[in-house]
Image: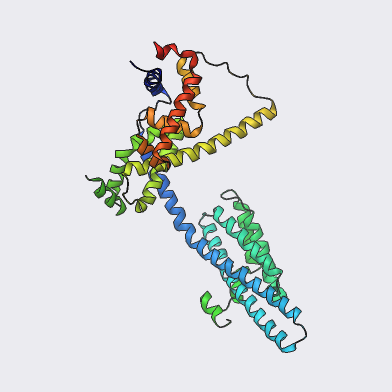
Length: 212
Length: 180
């Protein structure tokens, strides 16, 4: 004779078949979505990965460079009595800032060149706003460092701060007028020519090689 | 075609093999997602995400278990994580409604057995409900459930037993249905 528990379990299995009963599987609908989503994710990976890798590496160099610079400055202050040691440290510190600034300027030049090109092609998206915010943080960090002691560098950094702040506040696809104003502003201030002339010739690793 | 060959062809980027793999498994994945989510749009989203992840991670499939078991493990992860997010979202909405004082009057408990059963299953703790749905409704074995949920077979059995006990308690008014 069947026990109550068994009876209940048997009844339950039958009764529960109607729980969230699925409709027929929409094969084609879901397959189309899967293909579309995979294609979109693949594009996102191709577009973002080089930027992110390069951006992260450059940012790491900058943060490290500025950190070392500040540490050396602190050391120099502590050991202030020794003239020779102080002069050496000052020289090394300048080199560190120079490396950091060169990395930053190269990255900003590439960014602004890409931004202008994509703007002309009507392709500006949120990726640029994120990059601009990232570079803006570094600009402010450099403005606050001995790299900005040179008046020409300070003026350039201030121009870049303004341009990057404007780009970071754009709304993707909805700000054509402001985008035009930014490029006009860049042209009037000759931001890109100044930026290019401030970067030593050669690819980034070569530019920093001699300094280190 | 042998499953191993199919997997190798998908790994080699064969689009036809991808579709064949999808056709072979999508029905069960979708059914499980639907049973757990109780909503067609969510079930479709979860199924799509399951296959997107599966195709992306197929290189990591070592063949220790059947491909279906591996796929169902991805399905349950996607569905349970997704449902947690949905639940949090609904909770926030409910909190906002309560704060605004606009919540509707509480619905009277529906008297019919089908509705009561649905409510009782919905009210089960997530772990119990998942095992109950997989075993008693979708016919998975405890071994398959164990692999999919990353628990011991014994745990699956224990959770099923507790789920049934809770349901029996919740449906005590309808005891005549199964005692007779």
